[in-house]
Image 1 (cartoon, rainbow, N blue to C red):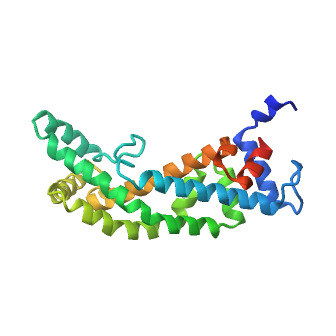
Image 2: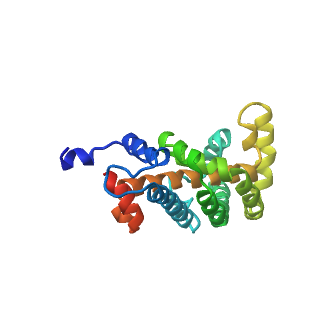
Image 3: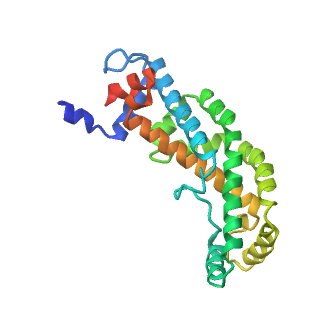
Length: 234
C-alpha cells in the first residue's frame, strides 16, 4: 500500500484498528503500538478535545459569536421575535438572546472537571462505543456520562444570568402558553432550562468537532502519544 493509500484510510478503518487493541493481547501490526498506548491515545484525544471546547466556548462570544452553537429563541418565539423586530422592538429581543448566550458562556467553564473525570474513568465498552458509533459517538459518550450532573451545575448560573433581563419572566409566560397550545416543546417553555440544555448541546458538539480534528491532524495536536497512536494508523 503506497502513502496515498495510507492517507485515504477511512475513519471506520481507524476505529476497527483501535478496537483491536482492546480485544487482543498483542500490539497492533503498525509498529510497536501497544494496547495501553492505544487506550492512552484515545483518552488523550478526548481530554484534549474537551478542554479545548471549554476554552473556546467559555469566553465572551464563545456562543454568541459562533453560528454553529449560538442559542436562538426556540421555534415559535423566534418567529415572533422577527415580527417584533419589524415593529421596532428588536433591541429588547436582542438583549434577551445576548443574555441567553452570555449565560451559556458563563456556565461552560464549570464543566471541565466533570468532562475530564468522565474520560479518565472510561472503560473498554465506552471506547468501543466511541470508535464504532459514528460521527456523534463522542457527543453521546459525554452526554451519557455528564449531562445530568452538568445540568444541575449549569442551571443556577444560567438562572442568575437570565434574570438580569426583564424579558426572561415574560418569555416563560408566553412560552408556557405556547407550549400548552402545542406551538413549542414543553422543555423549551422555561428559559433557564432551555438555555441550560442548549449550552450542553453546544458543548458536546464542539467536543466532537475537536476530537475529529485531532484524528485528522495528530501531529498538529502537539502530543507525542496522539502522534504515535493516530499518526501510525494514518
